[in-house]
Image (cartoon, rainbow, N blue to C red; front, side, top):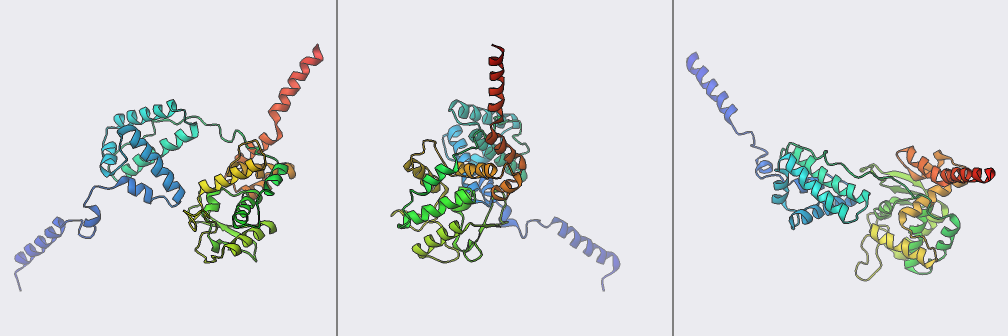
Length: 339
């Protein structure tokens, strides 16, 4: 047995060897290269529509400011700038957007994507600043929430030829937009397995809900419309998209939000409705009609709209009642009394 001094030296040497050992023994492959900040940012987004929007907006930033699409090196170069330099670049980009006539909401969305890129870079240790000094544009949300009334919606419901496959699909989509006030993104993401015909329910992935789905009740007419479309189409696999494209080039592919927008716009034009309509304006119309028919019952309207903030529904209610117009008429009328 070695003497105690020699044994102690051996133990000390082993401990020092442990301390000197590289700490990346198991994670060396993951830490070897510089991080791909953009790829990590996109991977961090669950919703494919959100991911696509971030990718599009960040690409626009790099194309306008560098003339090239973003890649790992150009993203790192941007994030390695000094804070003041990065802020200056983003402010110049914002000025380009304003001079290009973009709406305030669009500008804010693009700035938010760039700020998220910087925030992810900070998390990964690539930069040590944020871009919060770059302020967004002031937006007045929900300026026009009235849409059209139920009589005009009724006219539109008659334009779909429900003897054809195309008409069955478009009518089912229209009924979900109207009777359940769904968003086009929620409709686009539906799979066949999300539909319970006998329970007359639909499982949806609501806005801002991550992977937390919820069940909504369907009207008899909406349930019947979905069933007729699915039976006519024939693909009943649970993981199949509920609504698919029917054109030759994209047949069988999931119908996109843009595709739903085109269906709605064409239907309203065919019905002779002059107001430019979109899926979200059909949703506006449905919510406003609920408030009209329930004498402003915010609680019932929220059951259908699923707004997280009840104050949003108060805006709908204020716009519906036209309080400002009534007060303006009252003031003008008072002048006539004095004449």
